[in-house]
Image (cartoon, rainbow, N blue to C red):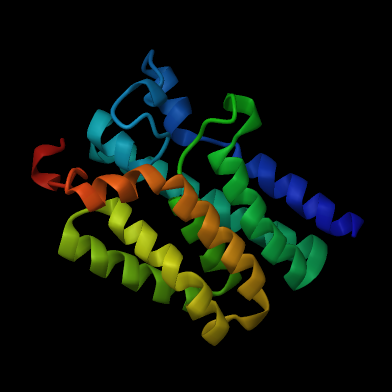
Length: 195
């Protein structure tokens, strides 16, 4: 049990690493004071452009994967599963930044890649397909979260109970987006207008 606690603590603290907040502060601002107020890739794209968004995405994916790899090394497969949820919680509710972070999507991708590449690929395909059709990152993220427990039953059965928790967290964080989608008010991506 103590090993799982260690896995959770390490993963949570890794999740606290927020490239979007750090980069925006280096520019004399705070990404959470701009656009959607979210400390994530999409808001970085809209506020600071493609390069900042790409760097945010890469670092968030890496920290998610690192958390799971450490979790597996310390606590085996259960430790890896615990780390998935903990790193996402650290990303969304970072204690170092007033418990106000991102929505956990990029960190989730990295964590799933380290946990089960097949599961990560299946979820990513669904997310990208929905994003391509709707041009809404939030719609793709929610679709991926909804599909995750079902896909985990097929591709990573031991992860299933953790996948339910993970999906609920991501959906909860996107509740305002879901409302805007239903009202037809959600912003759509247009990469041509970002530098």
